[in-house]
Image 1: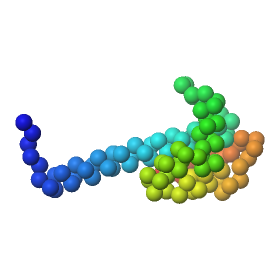
Image 2: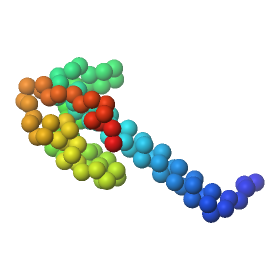
Image 3: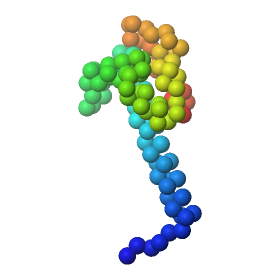
Image 4: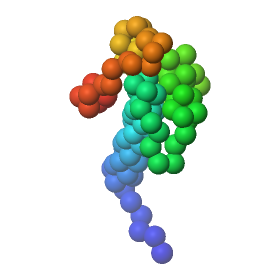
Length: 108
């Protein structure tokens, strides 16, 4: 048998769930940005990744692909801001030597 909850408890539970969901979306966006940066710097894929995975992340971020647009839309972040983070204000280096962001720059 379930115990009834009052409106305040219910509201708090909904808020906590929303916060957890948003934290998960931020983590996914951060991973996407890190993969794009890894590719831009020419680093090797980590275990379980392929060069194609990193390239796909880079292309999605730089070209404003579906994944970055959806994540940014859910988090109310301008996708162009994310692109600029990875490309350093739009200066895409074709030699794949774009600088890696520090943890403070990736924090949202």
